[in-house]
Every structure is written in C-alpha cells, then in structure tokens.
Length: 277
Image (cartoon, rainbow, N blue to C red):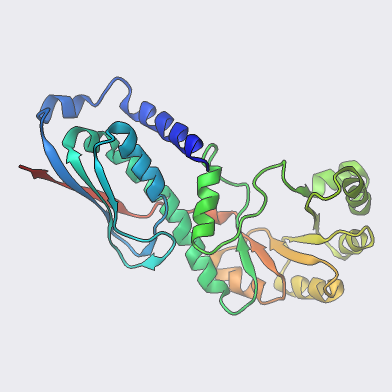
C-alpha cells in the first residue's frame, strides 16, 4: 500500500471512531496532560502493521514521539511493540484505531508464520487469496509477505484465473485456456481443474499453472504424477493448518489458504499509559 493510500485509510478509520471528538478525554483529561504509552504484545505471534499504527498517531499529532520496539514478521513470545510519548489526548484518541489495525494485521502475520512453519522441508509455499477485508487487501497481503508467505493475485486485473464457472461459460477448460492465451498474452494464467479430464484439457491447451481444487492427498499425488512437471501446481480448497503439511507433501508447489486472511484472529495487544510530569 502506498503512503497516500495508507494515509487515506487511516483518515477514514479515525473519522469513523472520533466523529466530532473524544468526549471522554475532553471531559476527564487536562488539556496539558502528557503521557508515555507502550503497546504490548500479550500472546505469542508475529507483529505487522507498525507503519499503520504510526500513521494513526502522526495524523493526530505530528509532535508525538513514536518508536518501534519490535521487528515485523518475526515470531516472538510477547513484549513491547511500540512506544508513544507526548500529549495524552491524541494518544488516547488513536489508541483503538492503532490497536485494531495492529491486532488484525498481526493476526494475519501470525497465521502465516504458523503455516510457513508447517511447510518447512516440503518445498511448497503458502499463498493467500482474495478473501480479504474490503479496503484492507494491500495491508493484509503485506502482512502475509512479511511473515514468509506469498501473495496470489492482487485482484481480478493482474492474473487470468479460470475458475469452474468461467470454463463452463467458455465451453470447457481447454477452450477457456486457449481463449485466455489469445486474448491476454503475457498475463499470468492459471486454470482450476477438478479431475483428470480437466487436467488433460488444461495441459493440451498449454496452461502453465493448474489449480487443483478440493482434492484429497491421494488425488493430489496422482495429479502431480500425471502432470509430471509440465505445469506448476497449486492445491486449494478447505485447507487448514492441520491438513497443510500433508497436502504440501504430495509434491505441489503451492498451497493456497483463504483462512490466512478471512479467519485470522486478532493478536492480543494492549496499550498501557503512564502520566508524565
């Protein structure tokens, strides 16, 4: 995500939360109060989203002193993540938005880090999907990359991915691949295959990459043997952390997991403040 895009995203998030202003802080906290705040990671996992959190506090008060206290994308047991020092009111105003972004993105980084661990030694890589939070895709995919995962296509515009419905409307897998190769030369192309007949059609039409959808490990191994290196293979469909290693061990090059983004829980973080004289 570019800096202008991130700034706009944070601007909208702050507007949603602050509205006409933080009435609690206005009522309770003296205007000249100063504080030191520390964002703390309370459970094991990988951190991501520090730039977004920094942007929250930057927009609220450029004079706040913000310091990173943890690396991104690295597994850690817990501890300090970010330190903020300065006027108390803008720190309080940004607390929830900063923690929401950090927690969500760190949850995705954590899920990805666990998946990468599960794949160690198999030679396969884990991919994300387009099952992302609307408006947060660029950040969520960045969290996957930071933790060692790989990104699938960014959207509908940067790769041809022929799914079952496309093939049905085009007249079959082979015909869909041929049409796509002619209409979008040079654009990365992948086609979903559900059985051996689909695989044979895809290979005959020159598909460079095949998505093996909802196949059992035995079916995946058979597909790997059938393709015999003529195309890159990706396994997809209902993949969980528990099933990931068995799927990857069949010989596919990639395993895609929508759960990295659509089901990742927020990492437990908190912001603790202390007044400054």
